[in-house]
Length: 240
Length: 240
Image (cartoon, rainbow over the protein chains, first blue to last red):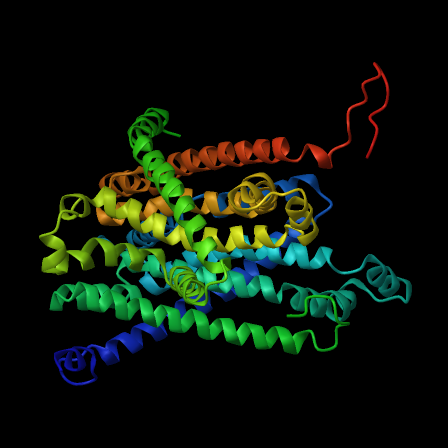
């Protein structure tokens, strides 16, 4: 019954901390997904732009953030961000090392990566809109903003949903790497618990299972969202 | 720009490149073989094996690679029977643990990719092969495997690029590959941008070369999809 005590919610149990950590993982990933959505939309617009220079810039962004290891990007944001913060601190007369808050650094790093993937998803979704609909909207005199709001955005979101689901799963797993900065997410807490109880196997299995719960639950959620979003679509396009 | 520093950094990082390449090639090789076994279990028709393969794919695709790697590296050593068995001299090595967990993880993803490739093999092609008397291994070797592999290739090349990036995690179990060395340099010099630039260039060039090689293989494997070159000198290519 020692396992129950180690994993329980009592004084010496790690259960509460692990659940909190799972919540932290969800928060980091959600923040990253939102940052990534904004970045992704901008980069997708850049990659679809008329101007060659802007297109190239968008291409460079997606190439770098999809081609370089996630861990390296987390180091870049964390250490780079910390030295920037330290520099700002020195400007205001504080001389010493200032760290970028690990939550912000982690969410930003994962957001940068997931923005690159989301950009590709949104670009693909935009290209999936039938050209005729855009022309029709223009023909009846909708301006750009209205066209975006009424024609482009609803369809892009609908076509992009399966892709966003993939990106979410990817980011959920990438967020485990944020643990290297010391943020108390699920990975980090499993590690700390494993180290302090010397029960490595147990805690990494439990941590892994909690990740599996998160990924399979969000899988379900996205599947039902997809069904809901495609209920007005003619059968044959993206039905599950 | 401090070119001597960049040059020095590049030299230090390139010295770690063989380690990254060793991790990458060994894990892709073993992961690919394991994936073949799993996909055979998955589609073989035996319900027990199929269920096992499903479970394997679910677990290794649903949890972060880092937690799998820590489970192998820290978790297995917790058990006396493993520490006293003949595999321990190998499992004690961080390099072996890293390759093992990378291979186990990629096998889950690759098995799914191969399975989608298999679905592209049309029943009539198999029927035709059976009709002329092929069966068993000959059928797989001549008909199923080439078609399935060709269809799986685009997704497989994405997975291989993911593997290049995943080797970075080996640095967290004390294998000194490119990202680990880069992290050490950042911590020593606090020149995040320069070190990141050098490491990013190494990974991007590596990924570029791999994608080019995969594109070449794809090109070689699909001559039937291209227009046949006319044998008449100066004639137009004839499309089939």
